[in-house]
Image 1 (tube, helix red, strand yellow):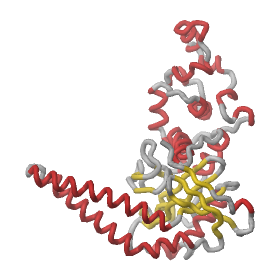
Image 2: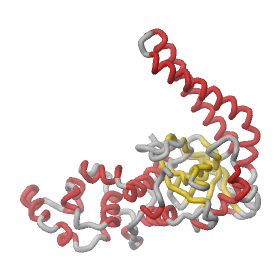
Image 3: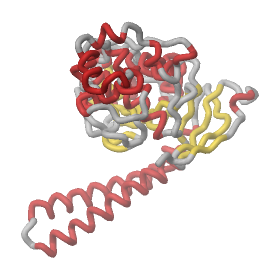
Image 4: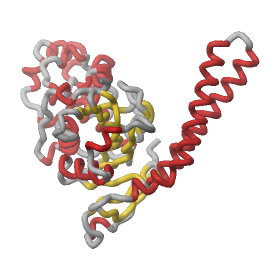
Length: 338
């Protein structure tokens, strides 16, 4: 099964006092002891002007080996400057560090907010303790987009996800469903994708409640307590997905023309023609299935939808139990961060 097992996200992030939540590095204690001989080396290199809080971004990972997982994440969160390559690689290649980085990226890419440290702690804890169902035939894995992408093909399973993160649902070891979502600052979460991995033969559906959107909302409502939940508008999701497929199809057509003119890239021509056929089929299927998908994201069962929030030009609807609550009536719009 592809994706991260949630148990692999070991290590605990610790909250800080309110005065340190913007710069949690200020809450780290015994810094000189953790630096060990590197403190003297830095003094020799930079002189008495060396200040850990000002210069720690220049230190290699080896110099920071006395700091815990929690403390390294606090260091990375607290600086706007690029840290040394060895530290940067840690946050790109080691799962638990990368998930923390992706939470921060999610807050930025879906609303250009940085949140505060304690919000990052909450999101990390909720993600790594998420559960799908007690049915032993179901398992979940975590996946996320590559680099800084706000949506796209995921790192581990190469599944296209409509958000930063995705829970990959497996039934009897087979990937059957993708739940895409993004975390925003101010304890907001966007539910952006509830999609079967196959178009047909989805017998697993009989093991789940009939209204899958209601079921998934309930999972997030229970396991992300205190968060404001938003569900993507089905119509806008279809418009975006179709536009993405059409752009990809146009690029595939261009490659076919180029390979035919070249006459020597027969293997690549066959691959591009196969890609064109697949994209054409996907577009036709989505266009035919659009009414059903729009209706699916509009029916929250016992949950109702209140105010709207437009993020990255995509409309999301606030989840609430009753329309009379004031917090479900405020509308807002956020532009795409550059």
